[in-house]
Image 1 (cartoon, rainbow, N blue to C red):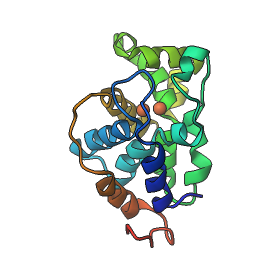
Image 2 (image 1 turned 30 degrees about the vertical axis):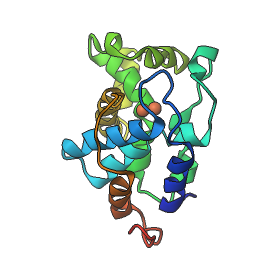
Image 3 (image 1 turned 60 degrees about the vertical axis):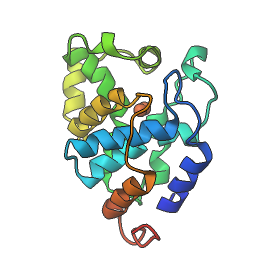
Image 4 (image 1 turned 135 degrees about the horizontal axis):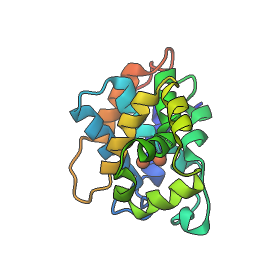
Length: 189
Ligand SMILES: [Fe+2]
Ligand SMILES: [Fe+2]
């Protein structure tokens, strides 16, 4: 299990890497997603899920734009064992479901698919494609699905060059507020 200092170290070590096919780094994408959530009044758990939703990319690094090589890095699952015990299920559920939320939104919102970035369209196919109506209903019945849909919509907007956000320390402070005891007793808490 990671602690908050480990997460800070991961972003320090790998956060400057480019987000595949997008004009932002991994850290910028994380901060922008969390910032958009915060601006919308999301609670600590959802802001934290937004900050960490792509942490799996940093833990399971596949090099430049793996979707072009037909690789699905399953990043929505990869970070979960490292975060379980540190954060409540609400944080883990939103991270776990953020890829399925894209598959859901493509089914539920006409026009959503066309607006996805090229890399998101490529990964969609590798991740199983658009849900059918039955799959969409089953998705929404899961705990955390609504938060995952919100996360996904901020995620899609968090790929902007030159977009000012609060610092990583600010969002780790919010993460500390929803961390489970006794891990909350960190230097950031
Ligand atoms: Fe993602
Ligand atoms: Fe993302």
